[in-house]
Every structure is written in structure tokens, then in C-alpha cells.
Length: 299
Image (cartoon, rainbow, N blue to C red; front, top):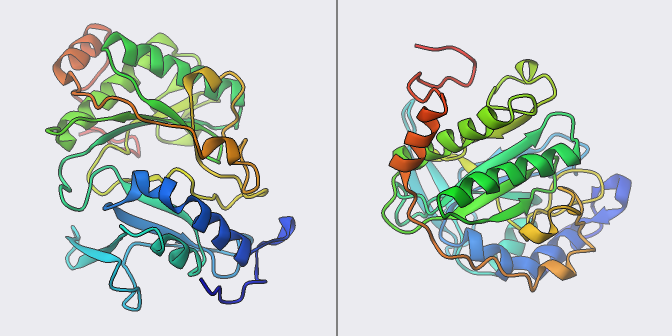
């Protein structure tokens, strides 16, 4: 495709141009759409490059081509949001040409918006300590295995890892949110000195944040093969469990993802045994009854 302002530096310190960013997304479009096709997207755009303030775009622009669908979703405060929904590979570099650096997606599709088909656990080390992030991710895997669940690791291109668990049809957000909260609580119960579910950074005290809050309607997660707006142009890529001991969250850059393009994340979809997970968490003393408030309030 013809790139507008191809020499514009989107990563000024690294000398990476808009043309290089669009070329990246042309190359990975099919891989990215394995995860993002038919899902409402939020676009993180940086018209003046990553050293300037970007913005998160939820509403699809009127000038987007008709091949990009819109999903109209009511807002709590009134009005609606018209999310972009992409199905064609050529629309990914088109959006990159709009200075999109990172694609964020729902964990449900536009056609079944109330039925999540991914459960996501986000392991976020406050201090960026890679060893802490790896250990936390391994703890989540050990808990998943107790319930015959499996998934894959996403090196996010930022500070931490995500664990993605593919879901069979028939789940709702209430059940998946509760199950993910229980899994996070079990992890913290077993590793209280290194893990926490405290949303506020001031209450984490160096512990890895086990974030289960992405498992809610309209919540988003970074799409695999997206670039991140960080020095070096890191890429969010899938990682095998056997690679975790050496993997870094930001270990793959725009020019070093060849080994990821043939890597498969084909994993059986799971029915989540919500009742069993909740029972195990409650038996371990995890509080699942207090209404959650990310700012620490209860009620």
C-alpha cells in the first residue's frame, strides 16, 4: 500500500520510520488476525511518534473503509461507541498507516459480545524484574494444571507476561471473571510475599500484580504481534512454556520476530470448571465475596 509520510520517525531514538511500521503490520497481518479477527478493537495511535502523547481510539473514524465493520455499543453514561472490527488482512496495515502502533482487542467477538472465548491473567511486575515475572507466570500455570487447563504465554512487549487460556463456547463474563479472580487469589495465597492482587501501586510493595480484571465486558488486551510504544520497538509475541525460563517480556523487536511467525498457539479450548476453582479458592481462604473496587474501596 502507499504509505503517507513514509519517512516520518515514529520511533525517533531508534530511527524507525512509519514505512517500517506499516511494513511490519503487512508482514504480520495474518498472524495478528488469528487473534483479533471479528473482535472490537481499540487503536493506540501516535501521529507524532512515540515520544509525543498518543491516544486511544475506540470509535472507528467515518473515513475508515467499508471493509472495517462497526459494532455499536451503548455507553454507561449514555450514547454509544462504534468500535472498529477487522476481518481483512489489508486493513491492518491500513490502520498502521493511520499511525496505529498497538492494537487492543476484546476477549469476546463482535458476533457474541457477551461470551468470552479467552481468559487472560496479566502478570505485571511493578519494578520490571524479569525473574519475578517468570516466576509469577509459572505459578499461574501450576494452578491451571490442577484444573486440567492449559494456555500459552504472551510476552507483552512491555514489563510483564500474559497467560491466555482459550475457552470453549458457552461461558459468560460473570463466570470467567469469578474464575480468574479465584485463580489470582490462589496464586497470592501461595506466594504472598511475591504476588498481590492490589490494584494500587502504592500497596504492592515490589510484588507482582496478578491482574484478573481484563476478564470483563469491553475490557481489552494487547493483540499478539502488535508493536508497543517503547524504546526499541518491541513486539508482543506468543511464547511456549518451555521458552519461559529464557524469555523476556520485551525480548522480541520489530526486526527479530522470524522465530515467532511459525510458532503455533493451537491449544484445545477449555470449559472452565468455575465451581471447582471457586471452591478451591474459598477453601484456601481467598475472599471472593467482597465486591471488588480497583481503588481499594469496599461496599
